[in-house]
Image (cartoon, rainbow, N blue to C red; front, side, top):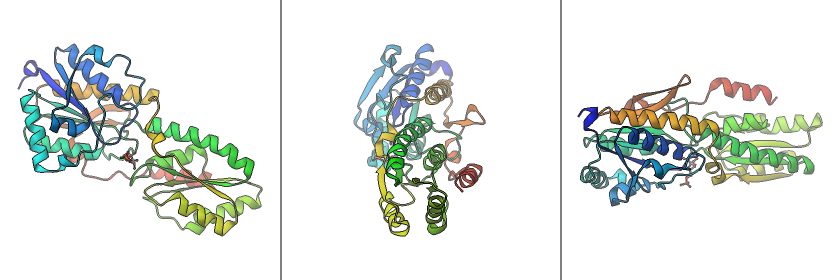
Length: 326
Ligand code: F6P
């Protein structure tokens, strides 16, 4: 297929929503429209592709979208897309609607569905958007910066009341099995300790001792950040209270970390990634690519290769976190 033969592409958001997804949708639509290519929005992720829940998107459809969190196309976790039958139905919709390419905005689970469609002959390009920031081949996933800022803002408020009551606040942070959000938020709020699924620490040494030593030197409140993939904040709080006698309170930030207006970073990188993805599809080749952020630039890599590894924490950031919490 040549560039001039590409007449229609699709775009969908899948998995957990992330602030900045709308910036990506807007960029895909505006880039395609500027080259005379029409765009079909697929609602509710792969569920919408399977059921044919589609909407024509024009330049005007994406007005006023850039500063809105969430996704105008809705999103869903579609278990049917993990079945042969579901994948065939989705591919059939693409063929019936004359889609010559599909931009998939989401996390690694979303890209597995995209790979299944590419095996059925559809050109697919993935854009990493998850607050977990756990997609290995990219330095950055859309939504992560906004989620960090939201969590840090909430925890700064917690610090006031913990200080006033001389308590220990134990805060559970999202991230599924990954600790990127917890590590960055923990450094950003000056946590006494950050508990991460990727790094085993001795609880007595990492949590109890710093609280005891802190109290001896006059520190009257403490903050523990727990990644949800490590353990429950409730269990940590019970241990802290039993071992130190300090009053402990639990805060589970939950889905507030997924909302809010996207930050400048998520708007700007989201726009860059959306444009890059659309141009890959408009080129008329049969890409199975993942748009990624690498060394400050937006490029792309083979989707399958990109998803093959697991993304570890930044060791230097982990060591910095340890250094400043002594
Ligand atoms: O993957 C993003 C994420 O926010 C995870 O950090 C979290 O564990 C999960 O989604 C929550 O899923 P749901 O929104 O379906 O409850």
